[in-house]
Image 1: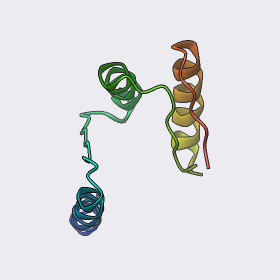
Image 2: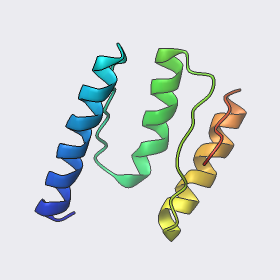
Image 3: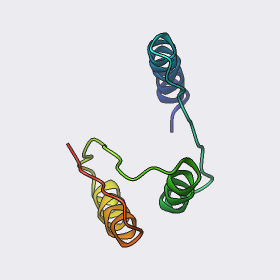
Image 4: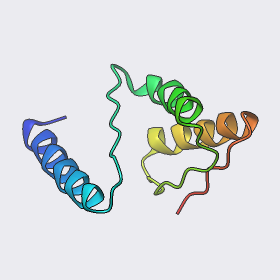
Length: 85
């Protein structure tokens, strides 16, 4: 990831955090060392926070589509619903 992309993501997350805070909602952020760690991190977060349904936006890059399909499968196996938009 380029420094400009990282700065854009950081600034965007700060805006989202402020908007959510105005509504009394806490933003949770989890960084993973490797792309492949994201599904396990998501499953752990859902278990800890007792999440039973999680909405997400589709991504269209090949690796991201494969990750999303695996996440849907594993979340479904754990009894959680993962509808994509």
